[in-house]
Image 1: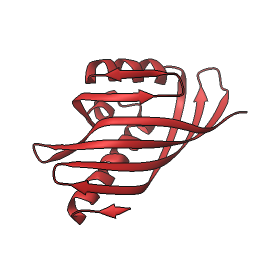
Image 2: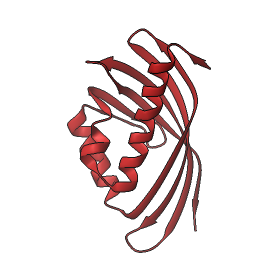
Image 3: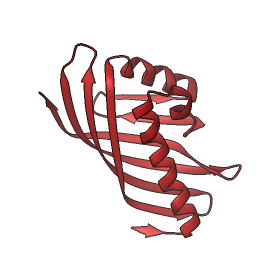
Image 4: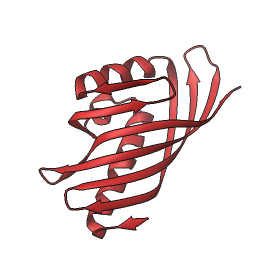
Length: 136
């Protein structure tokens, strides 16, 4: 479940945490900085792949515009490093408040492929699966 150099696994964990922090802040610049330029965001629950930083950012900004508050918590379940590539699985909990005040709670999982470029670990592919979606 956890293999490879501890320093790389820590850097990947920090990447996952930076991603979460950016969601809380609604900070598109910080959020997109977690992605490789040629990254792919795979969203099987809605049947789409979004490729490239510019397209990923635009999709995220559109999605986030529906929420006045977004709490995003991620806990890694596995990180496996092999040279300059890695895979990870994270479990997520989202607490979202829409712009009209409705509450939504989502439990999900990210399956990730990461690459190390210029010393930084970045998401090359994030595949997000919704495990539970509750609208209050």
